[in-house]
Length: 355
Image (cartoon, rainbow, N blue to C red):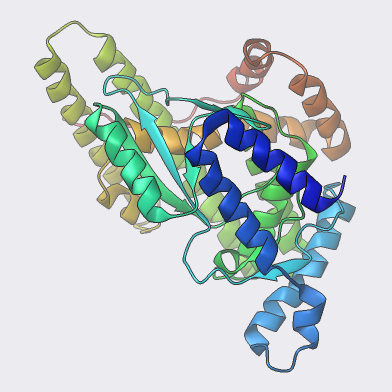
């Protein structure tokens, strides 16, 4: 099937299934495909910014590392470039009920049911989130610098992906190529955790062979912060589940919910002091927090400790074989297999309770 026929086929099917939401998604994807320029052509163009050339030149080495060292797909993805002229490629909307921590799910062709909806325009995302909020849901809307078409198309390097430097580009490519290698419909927690684990494992190996000792040490320190932050999210969701399960009026539960988030801020102050005062997560805590904000983080992190421990234990090739076997199970059966791996790890240190 030619690329054009594939685009039209997918687009028409999606449009027939769900109307205008899919048209904006189709239009956004077609824009990316239309604007692609081969990286080799840009590297040969004397008018291209030298800084951009340096970044794009490293992409070929990152791709070789991804396929050779991480056993990720070697295809036409990330052999072209698109300058989007905006800070994010998509804006994702997450929503939860007022008194629940699990996200609302939407179902789509090809990717299954996921806990978010993505938009190529910020205004459309915010309008959609505002409508959900009027219906009484907690909402979160945030930008993303990259996404994967799961191998349906040759994904380009985007201008939104390169602002963080070479290591950031490598991390994104490792993450998105993992989605192309293995993606499980209807189980975002597993798919995102798997991609995150390969991203982190791959970035450590990349820095070990292509970076400096200081860069590797800094990255590992930030992984510790990320892990501690994820533990904080889990602790808050546990706290909220207890709040929401308690009897009481709506007003009483709302007041208890406010107190729970106040406690979370206090926990962060203690955690930040333990980190030596780093400000990495200050902006996140400065924004309004709600159940959807937590869900947007938790989707990526639930199974990460278990999967990373398993990868370190069995090695990359055997790990991929086990993940492929797990992908064939139902969501419930897969969780039942993963939970003992998680339980076997040392529990995170208890976070202090406020007041």
